[in-house]
Image: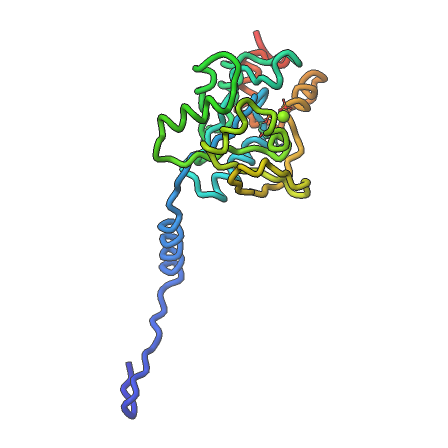
Length: 229
Ligand code: ATP
Ligand code: MG
C-alpha cells in the first residue's frame, strides 16, 4: 500500500498460478453436490461403449451420485424373439464393463427378483429402499419412443424423472406428457448389441466397441461362439 495525497493504492497480490488453479478446482468441487440415482436398464447382451458413454454422460451432466446399469432378467420385449445369454453372464459382462469408471455401477436387482422384468417393479423397489433419493430413469431416444407400451406405463412418472439421452444428430424423441423430462446429449456411438453379436458370428473382433475386460469375460464364458472351453 502507498499512501499518496490521502489516496491509498493497493498493489494487487499475485498468487502463484498453481494456487489459483487449486482454489478454482476446490470451488468447482464444492458446488458439485451429487444427488440422485440414475438407472440405465438394458439387456447388455453384450454391454458396449454406447451404454457406458450414455451412463457416463448422464452421471456428469446431472451430477448424480451414481448410475446403475441394471441388467434385465427376462426383457419382455426380447424374450421369444431371439436367444438371450443367461442373466448371470450378462451381469458378469456388465460388471467388467464398469470397472474403474467413476460413478457407474451394476445392479442385479432384476435378476434377484427373477421372472419377466418390468421397470415399474424395479422403480418401486428402489423407491422403498431409497426413500430420500430422486430416481432418474435413463433411456436412449429409441427406447423413449416406445415408453407408452411399457407395463403400467402410466405409473412410471410418479416414481422417476425421465432422462432422454440424445445422440448428436438424432431426431428429438418425445415422451408422454406426464413425464418430468431432462435431456442429455452425448456424442453419437453408432453401435448396438445386435450388431456386435453378428460381428462375433462372422468372426469380426468386438474391439474397440466392447472394452477388453468384457471381451475377456466373453471368451472365458464362451459366449457368442468366442473362446470358451
Ligand atoms: P439390442 O441390439 O440387443 O437391442 P442395444 O445395444 O440396443 O441392444 P439395449 O439393452 O437394447 O442395448 O439398450 C439399453 C439402453 O441403452 C437403452 O435405453 C438404449 O436406448 C441405450 N443404448 C443402446 N445402444 C446405445 C448407444 N449406441 N448409444 C447410446 N445409448 C444406447
Ligand atoms: Mg436395443
